Length: 210
Ligand code: MN
Image (tube, rainbow, N blue to C red; front, side, top):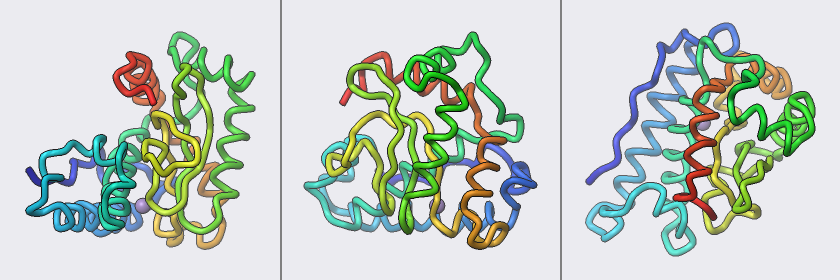
């Protein structure tokens, strides 16, 4: 069963002015699509064809570099599109479980924001910043290189990712050039907290405890 490029949940121009339409179109139709195509090539005719994407991530050290890079690319971008929304941004409402969890783990929303932005800004080269749920239900922030993610058994710090930010130059260079910190600040205007709180609730059900 081949993996498929998921639908983008909004139009290419929906996240403007924070993410421009051209960047979104190239990112989705070339980069994400490429990861899906190359992942399918890498698993074709092997027993990995029967595994879920999450299973591939959890045991990725057993597989080829192509599975690690393209499987990670597929997983990461599938999450990334969904945690942004044209109606997103601001702080999660106080009733959302994620709002309480952020306050418990980081002390305040602004402390969370600062730590997340710092993780994204200081990731050297290409990679991702993440908000994750740990095995003991706490939130933590981390970053990973290339297309790695915290689900992978090769990750420095493992957990269930519930929010991710792509800091590869392909994600922002057309609009922001070298100004990664400006792109990171714009991301806070797009975060779909409804989706993040749903991801948090799912992670807390325990099925994905690491
Ligand atoms: Mn990307």
